[in-house]
Amino acid sequence: MQFGIFSVGDVTTDPTTDTTPSEAQRIRSMTRYALKAEEVGLDVFATGEHHNPPFVPSSPTTHLAYLAAQTNRLTFSTATTLITTNDPVKIAEDYSFLQHLSGGRIDLTMGRGNTGPVYPWFGQDIRNGIPLAIENYHLLRRLWREPVVNWSGKFRTPLNNFTLAPAPLDGVPPFVWQGSIRSTEIAEQAAYYGDGFFHNNIFWNIEHTAAMVGLYRRRFEHYGHGTADQAIVGLGGQFFAADTEAEAKRIFRPYFDDAPVYGHGPSLEDFSRATPLTVGTTEQIIERYLGYADDVGDFQRLMFIVDHAGLPESIVLEQIEILGREIVPVLRAEFERRRPAHVPSDPPTHASLVAEGPDSPHRKVINAVVPEAQDEAAGSGASRTSR
Amino acid sequence: MSRRLVVVTAGLSNPSTTSLVGERLADAVSTQVAGRGENVDVEYIELRELAVGLAHALTTGGLPDPALDEVKRRISSADGMIAVTPVFNASYSGLFKTFFDVLDQDALVGMPVLIAATAGTPRHSLVLDYALRPLFAYMRATVLPTGVFAATEDFGSADGADLEQRINRAAAEMATALVSTRTGVEGLLQEHLDQDGASGRSRDGVGLQPPVNDFAALLHGHDGS
Image (cartoon, rainbow over all chains, first blue to last red; front, side, top):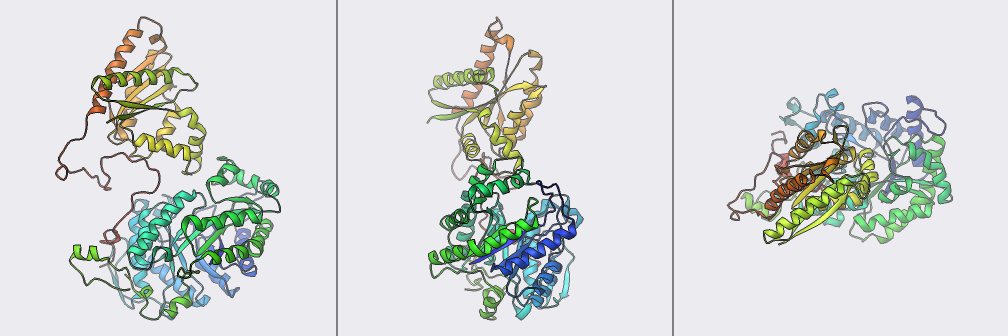
């Protein structure tokens, strides 16, 4: 199982000192958090992508390349890559290049992200959010899998005899997660292609998370990628740890109360009951997150947000240290203990996908097995394309 | 078959004039439904009890609230609704509007709704027609023709008899709507589907959106060929 941290890269005033980091300071801090993640034995660092203040990460591949150059082991991902407003050709090029630079340590999480005003800055319209996510991602798959692409879609200029450079490292496209909180279309999309499904549940109750993951798992099996419990699931998390619950709450509460997203709303206690937020001892945090496997099944990646709401760099580094040294080793052992042998521990990696060989379903643009009943209805029993 | 009627009231206190009007309307509906040989179960929803949860729903981008979710399910599965608000500064109260703001846009589709309002003066009586009726029309509810407006002077004066008459007329309309049933031969009666594929049924918006069962249909026209 993989554990990591993700940042949305918000520049937020520390409510306890009324100081605001500069964008330069915020970018440097994010870099330190990623390096700390590798140092303390975490597996993944993911950066958000935003194109409006108060967020800094507008150029994820620039940052991830810089981080890859200073690390050896860490996997890098995104939280999320905007499949709606980025040109799929540029995503294909940037992440292909990054995969070469990093030696195969890149995967991506696709999201629609964004608010209405952001779309037109990139020539798009939020009302096309789902069709953009569907069309752009299909083009991305083709760009990474077909040596010569001819394309005519609804949202970008046609491509004639386009060849991606550089081609994906070892001919293997990066593994992709589809991120969605509420859109059942995206869970369906992840299931169709056999991609991972990342439910960023940090503001959601476990019942909703379990329902979305359950839907993805059933459809993953329906499309012939394996059994439902073998589907590749990632979840989000949020914690603040100290020696006692009282101490953790004392330090974190002022940040919580003033946080841009949930501040001035529910109490810390109510929010903690309703969402994965756990503020307390490492034992409490471990117990809470172990329980999630009972609700959504054994999953493959758990990503914590640790650096939002104006928390200062020193506190964030300390929390990453506690996560890596005290929380994750126990979670790793316990999740491993409960996992059945036929369920993968980790999501696919570049190495594992290379090992699957050239005929791997991952290397096909469409790899869903159309179930028998639908075959007959469509009168095309020969449309099975892979395992 | 017993019908379910929900009474949503936005009174400030308990008891309140607004709840009282809601109860009188519900009692009248029960009597009228009984007169048609059917039963109705009445459930009361006092919005003041949900006020804090409603405020959080507005400020947290939809963080689920179990109490609110339960009320959403009860409303959308009901056969009819009576909605009563006090009039504040020339319109429905903010609490009343907030509640209908957090419901799914399709929460009341096709549902018979009896609108009612209370105020200190009869000069507000058109609030039913310029504020409440458009709100429920937008939500594609079936707003009954008679709305009931009760001003302070309707209670304990000779005009009280007029109020009683209005209540009975509105209750008769609701009772007729409640006992009428969908008719049509299975398979022949096409359910109307709108552009989004939504049927003419109310949807509580709790839990998952309807799942998509055919990705190929989503991908159609978007695969670049």
